[in-house]
Image 1 (cartoon, helix red, strand yellow):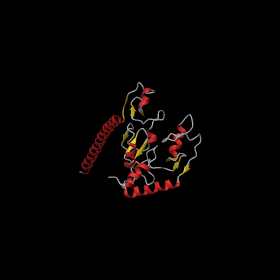
Image 2 (cartoon, one colour; image 1 turned 90 degrees about the vertical axis):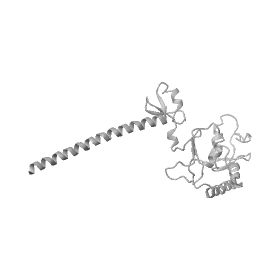
Image 3 (cartoon, helix red, strand yellow; image 1 turned 180 degrees about the horizontal axis):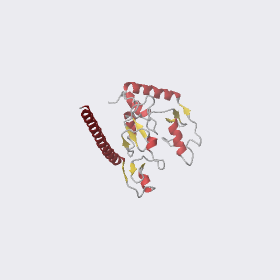
Image 4 (spheres, helix red, strand yellow; image 1 turned 180 degrees about the vertical axis):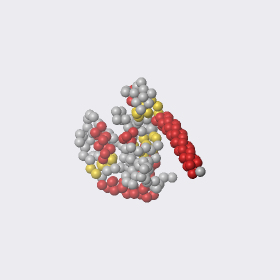
Length: 228
């Protein structure tokens, strides 16, 4: 059974936009709290009309004034410290993928979302899983290098014709008539190729080694004959 602390954390200490722990929490004129970056990005995405609150949809004018809710920020930091102390000892180590939502110290990511292009630890993944249509994969790092620069989608395919990674939308553009396979298939094919190359190199190495030993044996026999 969840403790009162965990229930409070899940229900009240998560930003309703990113579904993660608050980062620089600010309050809107209507009294709701959001991450400063989340609410700013949300308003920037609104093209026409006055800014609205994502929760109550109240119109807040063209330039809503945001104020840092210092008391609420202190509460968030307090419960984050409790979570880090009493929660899973799963801090991301060097070389591991960290959670993009956690404050420092960041927990190890459990999954990466291909829609949000972000990685989540197990506690934050519980909230994120409410987004049913989002696709989760095993955690990966350097997401910006794995995203198509033209379409903003994950590079999930490999174009054999151009020998490059592409996204699904690329198949409708420059790679429409090209042969493309999944990354898993491309990886397996590449591994088979490398294994064949390694096998051929091993044969060449063994042949050279046998030739060197033969030459050494012949030289030794010649020296023995001369000494006789």
